[in-house]
Image 1 (cartoon, helix red, strand yellow):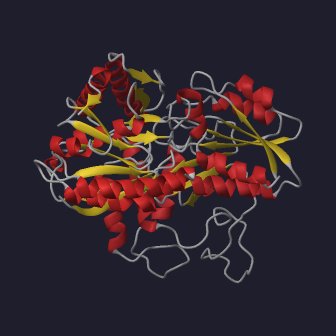
Image 2 (cartoon, rainbow over the protein chains, first blue to last red):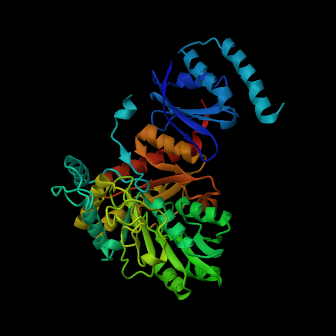
Image 3 (cartoon, rainbow over the protein chains, first blue to last red):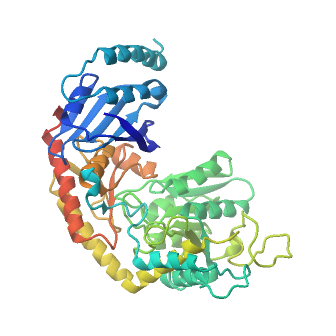
Length: 122
Length: 390
C-alpha cells in the first residue's frame, strides 16, 4: 500500500497536527490489525463500514473506515519531524497476510529513543 | 472510492451556508460576464450596480435603515476589527469594555489585544442556560465602561440574545453597543431601526446565502467611529485625505463585485421566501433532530431549545473530532467539530474539550435530517458498548 498524497492538513485545538492521506488502496480490518503490532487499536465495527482508530502514544494516531482510501493521521506536533517517515514506512510495508515486522520494529525502537529524549529528555 | 460517491449531506451552515440559491450562482456569473460597473470608476454604463442593489436589499431586510449607513467589508471579523479599532481610536487613555463568554474569537481576540495594549480593561460576562442576562450585564457596568461588543446569536448554542433589553440599559449608561449578527442575519427578523444598538455586524456567507469574502456592518452614527483604513474610493479624488462621507468613510479600494452580486441575490432569495417561512422550517427540523438525538442516552445535547438551526452535542466515550470524522467518512455528513472559535463557550459547557455542531439551512431536506439523525444515533449506539480491541 502507498500514500499517494496528503489531501488536507490543519493544526488542531489540542496542539496536534492533522494530515489526511489518500492511499492507493482501501484500508481493511487486516490493515488495522497489522497496526496493532505498534500500538493500540479500537474499533466500532457497526459504524459505517467499520471504524478503526490506531493510537501510538506520543507519536501519532490513525483513523479510518474499512473500505475507504482516506485515513486521518494526527501527529504529536513536537515530534512530528521524527515520526512522519515512520507513517510512510508503516503504510508501504503493509500487505494482506503475514508481514515481516523485524525491520519495522528496529526502526520503531530507534525512533522511540529519539522521541523519548525529545519529549522527556531521557 | 465508493465512500466519495455518496451524496453529501451538508450540516455546517453555521460556518458557511451551502448550497447557494441558483440565483446566487447566476448573479456571480452575470457579474463577471460584463465589465464591472463601479460608480466613479468607469465610463461603462451597461453593467448592473450590484453594490447599490446589495445595499438597498440589505437595508430592506434589516429594518429599513439608511442604505448608505450599511458598509461593505470582507467579512464579520473584518467589520468587528474596523468598529472596535475605530471606536477606541476616539477614546483617550484606558477604558472599561464588556463582552460575553458566548462570543466568538472575532470579538474576543481584538478586545484581548487591546486589553494587552492597556487600551481597555475587559470583563467577560458569563452566560447561563445559553443566554447572557441583562441583569448580569448591568452588574458588570462600571463608571468608565465605554464599550460592549456581543454576539446576537451564539455560533455554538444557537441562542439569540436579548439585545433589546441589553441595549436599552447600555444606552442608559452611554455605553457604545456593537452587536455581532454573523449568525442571525438572514435567519430571524432583525429590525435595526428599532433596536437600541449602535452598530450591527453581518457576514455574507452564512444566513445571507452569499459567498465568503463579503460582509459588512450597519452603523447608526458614523461619527462615533473613526476610520482606520484609508485609500481610493472613486470619489473626491483631489483630496489627499480620505473622504468622511458615508459609506466611503469605511469602504476603501475596489469592491468585491461578484461577491456583492451574490449577496444581493442571496438577500433577494431570503425576501422572496420570507423570514417567517425560513424560521418555521428551521424550527421544525431543529425540533426533529433534537427529539431524535435525545432518544440516545449516550448523546449529550448542550442546547435543547436553540433559536437558530444549530445543535451542539457530544457522544459519551468518543472524542468530538472522531465523531466528525465518522460522520464525514462513514456517512458523508458534514458537521463541524472542536471549539468553533468560541473557546469560552466550551469552557462552560464541555470543559473546553469541544463538541460536534450540526447546522442546517433552508436547503436541508427532512429526509437529510432523518438520515443524519440515524447516523448520529448509530454512532452513539455503537459507542455505548462496542469500543474494543480490533
